[in-house]
Length: 295
Picture 1 (cartoon, helix red, strand yellow):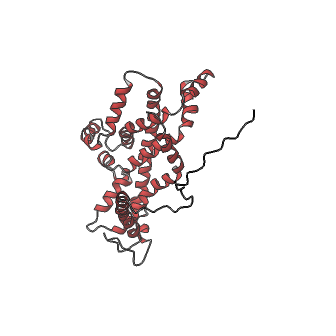
Picture 2 (cartoon, helix red, strand yellow):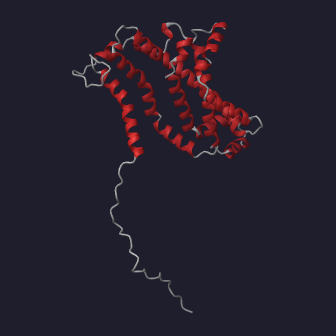
Picture 3 (cartoon, rainbow, N blue to C red):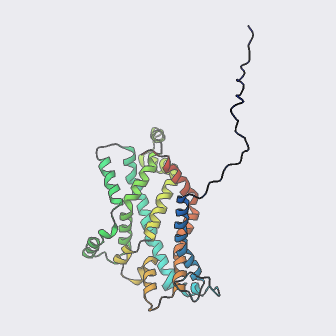
């Protein structure tokens, strides 16, 4: 018996074969692309005003190129009372709230991710509901409570309240990232004699560093831009963060100095931008991991 090679059937000459190098037709702009470009332009207009006005000694509300670019606006706001002390207060207030939030979110998300009980689903639904609760709706009773317990104008109390307000969303995010860490790795560590806290610190957290970075940066951005909470709970001028100092800076003049206000706004936004640049890779990988997690 001889083996015969299988040959493909001959091509039908009536059916034209596609040209391998045929040029593709270019499609015109779709309506969705036009809408997105228009939205991007509208968002870039205020940003362009802030950047240009910060270098214009005679800045106004109009978006215009400065006739003589200068750094006088930055020199006018770079002092202790206007910039340095409020920025330091923001670092202490928002950094402390972020640290407390991340630690508490990890400790709260671990049992929700690793143990199953009848109370897990109602608790998660409560957390989801709390993430959509506006903080302005509870500030009046919170202010009254702070007055009664004599915690008004306390930086540590403001840190704890900011951490509490950011904790529901942080727990929700952390639980999703923690679900992606295999339980078998923890079980192997338990067999070797590791305790639960040691396993959480040395096994689980190193494997979800991108997720922790996402939670930290979301919490910091949320607290950094929070104006209402420190405005209500802090009274002393030497304790006010930059978010409240920005408001008082723009209202203490009869005629607003737009150039100095724009320069202060750029200095106020710089720490968040630097944080995005430093944690950019971890933030991107954290979002990619979040997309592949199972609920």
